[in-house]
Image (tube, rainbow over all chains, first blue to last red; front, side):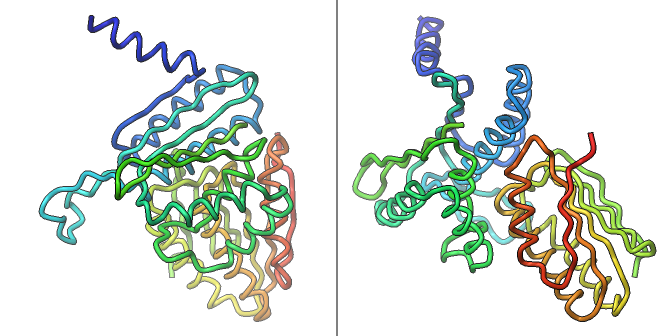
Length: 189
Length: 129
């Protein structure tokens, strides 16, 4: 029963071509570890340098998006005091890396606040419809710009993903409850 | 001021070798630190100190990056800005951007940074090997 259940879960992933799947709380060391295994697997697959770097780059941006922006977090109660040794909050998300036909596919999903959905949709639709040259121009503009309020990085992650992808990124939202929606982003290389 | 900075590379951070007496500064490897500010903060400080005393002197900065994430790209832009500012004040600054010939994304990124340098001299080179 136990083996059957887990084997079924694995089979579901296999049928979708998934090679790596991580669902749970993500931390930077998880990114490091999965990233190393991913590099090894791509090397074993004899992926060319450009593909290896692009898959890896997209993986890093997707993982860091979950870590920084997932609305589903576990945090110690009461909230941590400003102390370097205090337990940090950790973010929940799901990330898969797989193959579809001859392409690598990196998918990531996490909860976001419903109030952020329109902003994300607008931003991603714009990026999705851009040519490589337009993306390059926007990337440069954003590199010089102040990050948007709420941004915890350079505000370049989605653009980096779109630039490294070999076809337009795909994204979608599903209602989770009144407060949260599930956000999914897929990039093919 | 210390005459040298030598930070060894890790899986996620590049080697930083600033030889201030030889006026040769180098960043080499991969850059996707857990915390960009924590890693690049001391590098910025060291570069600021060095450049503030450079005057009309000359220096060379080599970027030999295999891969950098988007937050590191912002840090690299800030390094470039500092070098450009020193060149504008009269220093002779040579910036070398080495890219892996198999990865045109890093070549393009180098070109983009190079476009913003007016006073510092920019060189785009393939990595050896």
